[in-house]
Image 1 (cartoon, rainbow, N blue to C red):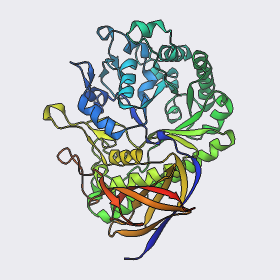
Image 2: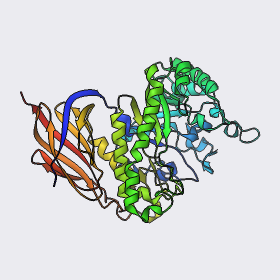
Image 3: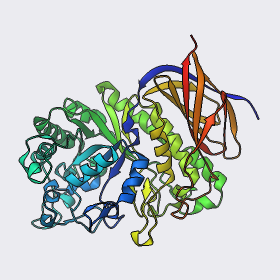
Image 4: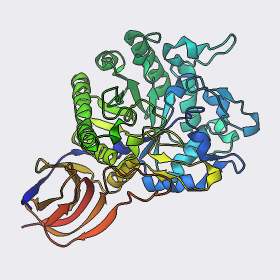
Length: 480
């Protein structure tokens, strides 16, 4: 086996945000039961088996909203549950009961140790089909309603929240104004959206000047959004649904099963889409000193309620490469996600929840396993690393502990590499490894198939199995 080397320069480069492993919770109604699947309507609390899976996943941040935000009226889902009125879920069809609202979402975040991020209704993002879907029905909400939500959550003296049983403030720091606003030609144009964002931000900051605000800047809007509303917003949001899986792609339908080597090569190149997207967004916000928030990101494939390829371990390796790209851009990328969190249908979820009557427990998808692995084994500061071409490696550190995220992009063979930390001596180490046949597809019958294996490091070299994702932790000391 050819001798190769992974060499780390331990000088800190920039801080790595823990929010690079965000998840988001959006009631998806008929599309995927999502929130409803996780909520026990008899006990009026979150299902414990879902909470257990989420704690294992350990997301540092959870966002409330998505397209749902554009017609959500938050006051309908606070206070006594028997007084809450169900709402039409205009994007996803069906009804949402509103039994889960602000208090329930924030209780969930507290229980799993995640920072909440709330998306507000910015006048339905100009989409009249959501703002006024039927005569006499108004689902649009202005800046006053958003500001009142901030007050409800963060004002220690808010009378309504206290009357609803929560004496202490929720202290929600992160808020997003606008969601996918630029994607609809019948919604706000850039100038209007930027102006409305500025008004919303000013009104919300009057209630709490310490909040961090995220504005929509996708589709080439970032520069103008920064120019108009930049004085009041902290981050610029975009979404990235990489690899469309169009006809002719090995990810189209079940084509991935015909020639899996072709599928593997295709998945290994998915990270380049993320590289290009971040380069584009970086160039737009750099003159304004703003950081980025990818508040939604995942593969977008035809037949998305199935997309079995995303349950293969090959997809897990592809997700790891994409996470490495995000880490390398951690100087400007503050918030990011690669999944739609949990539900019982979409293969883009981090956690799948089987139908309760079947008694199977929720289990992590490949993207969930990889995000969990990185989340538990990542340093606070990015450092530089050099590595051979058949590996994809990022490095970080906390104190004298060095962390490596190593992806073996070879489907056919293991790679052995010497580990070197410049100016430091490796005292001991552990590796947390996920290695499986790339074609293997996880199901509820094999929920732990991709569980990492912990191994002790006995020397200064390591063999990374074919098609593997490994987190390495090294205890080091200065050579001096």
